[in-house]
Image 1 (tube, one colour):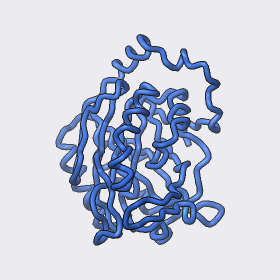
Image 2 (cartoon, one colour):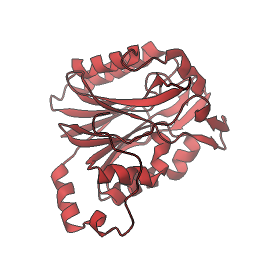
Image 3 (cartoon, rainbow, N blue to C red):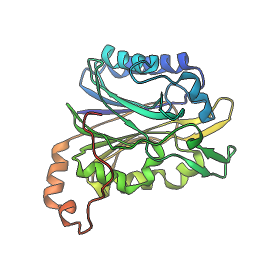
Length: 281
């Protein structure tokens, strides 16, 4: 199968961002094979501050952004991990939600970002406080697809090995990671964390990222979208710029690796009780 990651330089202009994604899908689907597509975090609106997401937030199944991305999945017959969009939560904040759409535009599942980026970074923004706008999700998602079982994590989740282990124990073959790592943290840790999560959990990691300066330089992201195999080998990456990075994925190789090196069966620590997995949430 073909896994394709879209690297974006999204702005505050939702229409422009959506048009870019559509234009890239037109280029991608010249290749008629089935694709698993992963979009980056905030693919439709990168505001520079989390509060900008409030403007476009909507309830589940009432979001025009959700419907627009589902329509693109159907139009181009791709299975799509559709980046993130803001969905209203009961406490007045938002969920940062990633939907997984099938090639008929149907919703196969979703995941709400668990770990919120409340940190100080030595860049132009300096303070990031996602929890002012977002509330954390409360379950993992490992979703059955024609491409195997796909787990979803989002950006800062990458630093939390327990989450990835929980998805691996739930059977994830591929873990998709829509992301918008800062330039500072990306340069330091992005690649090594992606490779570590792939090796530890013996699964493919498909990480689609934002790249470059956004909105006249108000934010700068790292890029380097990449697909990593269970041995930690980088199958494909795009260090800079926008556009696709794609690679073929053979899940049978993963099965063979787990038979030869049954790491999960050797683990003597109790499996993390990280909430219940929901294969269809």
